[in-house]
Amino acid sequence: MNIDHQTLRAELACAFRWTARLGMHESVANHFSVAVSADGREFLINPYGRHFSRLKASDLLVIDADDPASLDRPDAPDITASALHGALHRNQPHARCILHTHSKYATALACLADSRLPPIEQNSMRFFERVVIDEGFDGMGLGEEAERVSRLLGDKPILLMGNHGLLVAASSVAQAFDDLYYFERACEVYITALSTGKPLRIASDDIARKTAQQWRDYPGFAHKHFSALMAILDEEEPDFRD
Image (cartoon, rainbow, N blue to C red; front, top):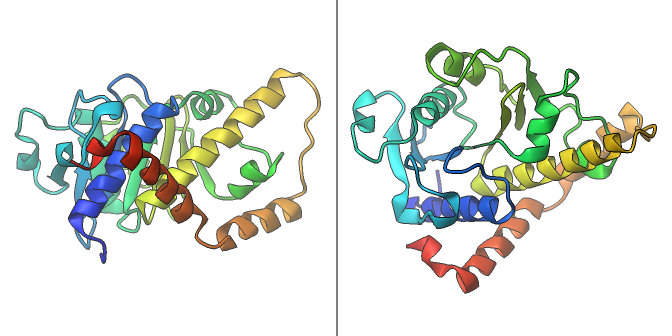
């Protein structure tokens, strides 16, 4: 890790605030985390019951995935949050930042019998061959269910959780948020296109694969996107850094 603890706190607080601004949150549910230790087992996460739109850097809790005692506090994370994110940070140490939402369009896709996202435009092509679909939902993410889900991710950035929602994993907060934003946008376009009842214009695998690689090669896009979001908050809601 070559990024300081306070910067990670501010970045994650920014991600919470923008998720609320964009309507991708759900009440006081859902949870984001970012690793603060080299092995990923210590991580920042939001406290239970705090609305995304009000979260500050100082509100975020440091949790040890191997130490149940770190949850012995009145503001401990939601039990599904600690179980799921703890399992993910233990089993997928490369996934430094993990964002879990029940955003409208990604969750709608997760409710379809066929939850694949076809390559119908360049945002959906960004995620071609980069999505894992969980088809084994077995209740809320506690205990064995959290462990099962955590082992599905592998090296993919997107875990579409059937009958549940969306989970994004990345090496940084900026990359994770950028993927969250664009996956939800791609799902919105797809669900809207389906609603017309007209045939879809689906690109070939070769074109989709080429476009996905072009996205990965695009220089610094996620960082520039997230830097712009932080700059807006610095002007309009500077207390997110407190």
